[in-house]
Length: 444
Image 1 (cartoon, rainbow, N blue to C red):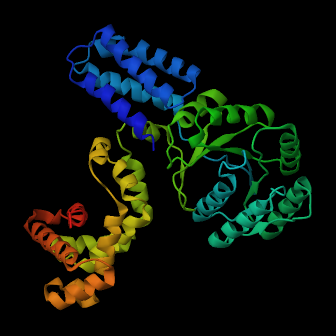
Image 2 (tube, rainbow, N blue to C red):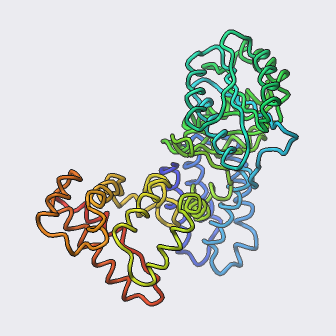
Image 3 (cartoon, rainbow, N blue to C red):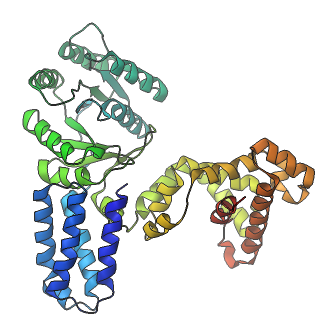
């Protein structure tokens, strides 16, 4: 996500950090590079102009010129102005008398139907009782898709393949009242482009639903086109919020940075992956930090809290303090970490990890290989790795699709990690996941 843009910003910041004093020429040179980086990322030209004017005005001010570390101050200014451009505050869904009615709109292929399912799952996890409404009657596949998603997350889907969208929505609202659903999420029809027929249908559905929220799903990978689409929907049907989909893909960043300032509608959610759990509230400050290569520790903590079982974590901490953590415990941690998402995405949330990730060959296959090796062991072997001799290693290698040498590496790295744990005072240690993974990358 934003790899190229982040790399450009890191280069600009590196040139500023080493200077004890910044001249206007230094600032102009840095901002010229920032301008090129933003335009290459397909950020709206007007947005770029306003952003740079605000940054330059503050960068030439007294706070920077009198600072002991002017380079750091300029970086701080860039971060703050990027947060402003992205929307400043996290904007939640509105609070409304039940049922909260959400109309999902967007072009065909933007990820609208999938996002409706993700949003239903997210709200259900918060204790809500959602009802999905398949009102895209133009495309039977969209109805099938929503019904499949609803089945997977155990959320009811209301539809009538022979009805009219507006009439269907009225019936769905009655069904929500009958079943006690406190959230209604309506998936509407899309087109390849904005046209009069689409807008008429959306207007009819909007009148029938009287929605509390109209969320526009925008494909983050389409760059400037996404901003134009957002402007079109805002003018024709009104939009209360934006959902950026496919931010985990090769997104240049233009849509994410531009859409709030161009449309005036806040970005409320971001789709960070293909899984139904990969929908996050949009935090402008965290997104700005990710774009600038500063990491996103808060999101990492939230992911960990949502993934790791508290009781199991406490149990593991106790074992850690006693130096008793086994391969069986480590397997549980490994599987929980996998549920957090791809390793590269997790590491990217750590401050300063951008350049490290570009140099390192971080691969989820290494994680799966270690997991397969440990899973091929018996419970007794995981608790007491010392009993694993040559024949056991061959059996484990066969079972995990690896070689005995790979099993040796995992056992050796884990043994070294256990020694380190026992040496550390206060139990502040953990088995070296990085070591286990790097061992698997050793040339065979």
